[in-house]
Length: 77
View 1 (cartoon, one colour):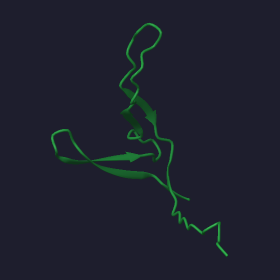
View 2 (cartoon, one colour; view 1 turned 120 degrees about the vertical axis):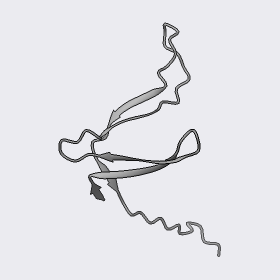
View 3 (cartoon, rainbow, N blue to C red; view 1 turned 180 degrees about the horizontal axis):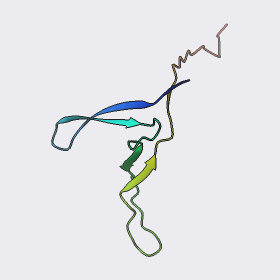
View 4 (tube, rainbow, N blue to C red; view 1 turned 45 degrees about the vertical axis):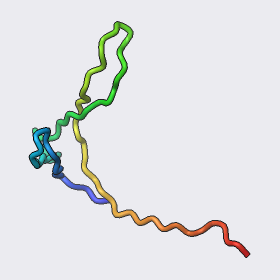
């Protein structure tokens, strides 16, 4: 597993422009708070709609090189 202090995401905006965001989890970074769509369609017990976004703070950025090889488990005679 490899650890990183920054990552960059390329995405398409609502008006079909390409854009880029960077998350930085280095010391004293102010760029580690994120907001993503919640995909919650439910309401709470007071019939209030669910909030459309989740807010989070990225604590670390990691990646791994994973190789998956499938061996047949059943071998015919």
